[in-house]
Image (cartoon, rainbow, N blue to C red; front, side, top):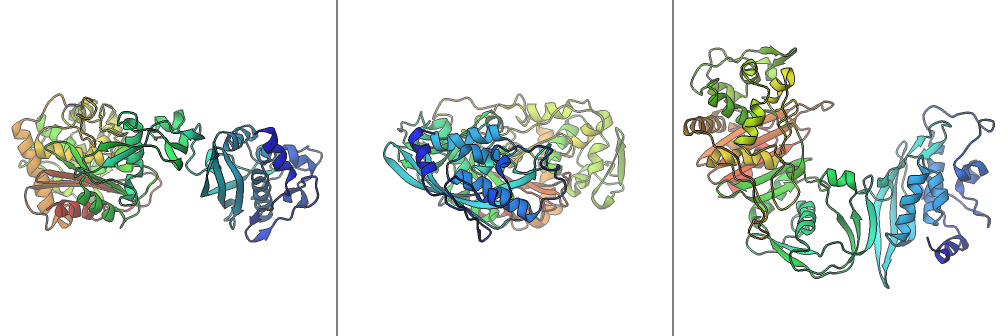
Amino acid sequence: MGKNRRNAAEGRRTRPVVLGGVIAVVVGGAGLGAYALLGGGAAAEDGTRTSSAREVRTGPLSADEVTATAERFLTAWQDGKVSEAAAATDDPKAAAALLTAYAEDARIKDVALTAGTPAGDKVPFAVKGTVSYEGTGKPLAYDSALTVVRGAGDGEPRVAWQPAVVHPELKEGDALVTGEAGTPPVKALDRDGGELTTAAYPSLGTVLDGLREKYGEKAGGEAGVELRIVRGKASKKAELSDKTLLELSEGTPGTVKTTLSPSLQAAAEAQVAKKEQASVVVLRPSTGEILAVANSSRGFNVAFQGSLAPGSTMKVITASMLIEKGLASMDEQHPCPKYFSYGGWKFQNDDKFEIKDGTFKASFARSCNTAFISQAPELKDDDLTKQAQEVFGLGRNDWQVGVPTFDGSVPVQSAAPMGASLIGQGGVRMNPLNMASVSATVQSGVFRQPYLVSPEVDGRKLATASRTLSAGTLAQLRELMSYTAAYGTAAEAMAGVSGQTGAKTGSAEVDGQKKPNGWFTAYRGDLAAAGVVQKAGHGGSTAGPIVAALLKSAG
């Protein structure tokens, strides 16, 4: 912080922070804050305590401790007293660095913090300020929260430091910066030439950020001035894009055309809005074009970047492998016992059902777990991995969609985890984009890498699969999915979806969740779609209606 700014902060009258409706009064010219009045004392100024002055505090935090600690931190931050604010945290060095950068790099001044009513050890607060850069200023407002904990060693209450305290979208290693944008803005268009905006399509925030990051400099635009989050190593590893928080002056956008269908995108937005934590993707199997992508939660693009166990939708891939290896055939008898033990684990079917003297088609349609896991002793550890990579193009981290994506993962496993992977558990991880691509591959017979921006725009090379299924295997796989859509676990959701159809449901158990994640993947004609609704239950009744509605809406 510059000398003049520091002197100005120290010279003006200290402003109290209102916490839970109570004003923390600040008196005198020596900068004694609310914390001192409440008994913090001089020793609190540098965040230290001596063992002779006070015993180590233990036990749950009291309401007064939470209130006083939050007041101390927020008042000091509001008045530009970075060292005092940092001393109120459990990581003064990291806090001081980010709070200093908040003023100097992010150029946020005239900060006003209004605290809300504490909820246990958590205190919400509203932030208002002004972002200024070379004579241009704009107001900034957002909400955040802090948590009070006992400090290690002395037990004194302190703010648990994390970057999200400063701004809720900051991760470890990220930076807040105001200046010329790193990349020019882009004007994203749908396939018909209409502009894509978050006002019309709320789910597209992360997609638009990704398009700007990749095509901003290539699309012919000029950068403006903005406050943005510049992602650090951890965020980049999680494939999070830099994010614009406030635009001070507009740049000149370049234009990027996408493959999104305005009607299907609007329909997808409407469908996921009906559920919490729902995500869906719609593709065109004949080309790989992505026609719609939507998430009910906005902060992270689960549809493209999620990494979740896909449950029984994985049985589409597993079935193709078993048929190829002669371990299953749709009309032949296939075991579906109540239980099957493998690798020290005892596996069972939903509600412990069994199918006596049933066919593989019946087991697939009813989603019998043991019908698949019973074949694990006949498989090599890497068989499923190879099938996913070689036929379905998954798990190789080579998709070039146009924005960041997670391309699925089917790791080589052994014993019980390998058996679990056959039914989409174990270490298998997918997202709706991956599973929509699986249905698209079955429908068309060929893996075509999904894409949001045509490769002709920038000459990038799309991923390919090394082989296709034989005609006989493909015919059986299509019949299995068609039968499931008409008579199996997907029948209720797919009722009324006409034409050439196929579907598969899935429910993925997750440790710590009362209800599984519900999955559904399907195709109709030259459309394929997949969706997931987290913590909701079986796929046929949760994600199924979303996917089926979109297949219907496309005519």
